[in-house]
Length: 368
Ligand SMILES: *Cc1c(COP(=O)(O)O)cnc(C)c1O
Image 1 (cartoon, protein in one colour):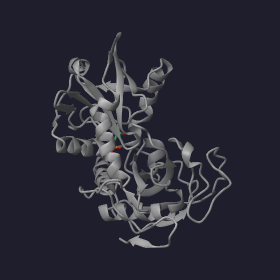
Image 2 (tube, helix red, strand yellow; image 1 turned 30 degrees about the vertical axis):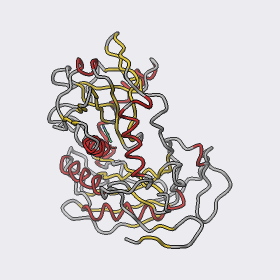
Image 3 (cartoon, rainbow, N blue to C red; image 1 turned 90 degrees about the vertical axis):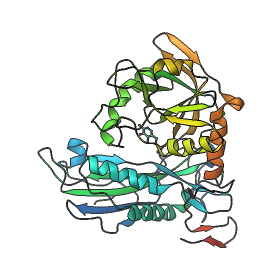
Image 4 (cartoon, helix red, strand yellow; image 1 turned 180 degrees about the vertical axis):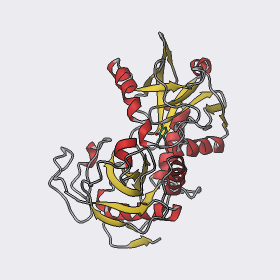
């Protein structure tokens, strides 16, 4: 694998770096790539299993022009975050869930996936190698992007003879629940997923087709697109990269993950927290009609955690929903981010502790 480390010209970098932190303007973090020092790479031949990978300097990779990923889109991605907790510990959120989701996807795309242990270990190693890039507590998170791609050469449509498991990371900022909500447009033209397709796995091939729809919506002032089911066009499915919930009274509903919807880990976590505080959380078909009658709508995903939907536009009808302090989404956002940032005790076992040091001291507080 040929490497070339790119000099970074990100406006988000300052000239101040020290042993503990990289030279990032932490206050200005958004959701854009800031290249870090290292990445993880492991390879595996078809029919074999992944051997232990290595941490190498972050940089470009070199693959065959005839690779499975370049020609036939044989690839999966994952996305998760690691936080610097109040006590200085660095803690990824539920990495085993991403490991399992990658396995399901690999099965669908006929690739070999790393084992759950390998995946989690690789996440820990990558985060530790890039420890300086984990934002200070409360200022954001280290976004972790694992990839599983067919890198071997295939000319005819087939599974590639070699796969690469790679993880890179980038510091990202916080999305605030209270900042203005999303303005969604229901898409009447394009469909994201079909029964029997790949909508339920994080296949790279699912995402570039969404961009056209997203650009059209953004050019008309919307923040994102809400896709309908391909079979009937009557039920809501999800947003381009996050799941959706509707709230009416004590009932919180979200479309079921029965093949066309990506089973979000935030979706699963928020459902559990909602039940913990006495809401009835239902996974079932949700029609557009019901959406338009809901009191509140919100989205969930790793990047934004939980985000209120302010309006939904369906044809020429624009419906406004409850947002702000009174909204359930605000409460759920706080509940989950408090766990993620180590502000409240994690009774769920969602945060995985990796080697950490209390800021300003050299005291080691946990070891895996
Ligand atoms: C990644 C993703 C989500 C959210 O999943 P999380 O595990 O919560 O980040 C939802 N929908 C789609 C289409 C996605 O790609």
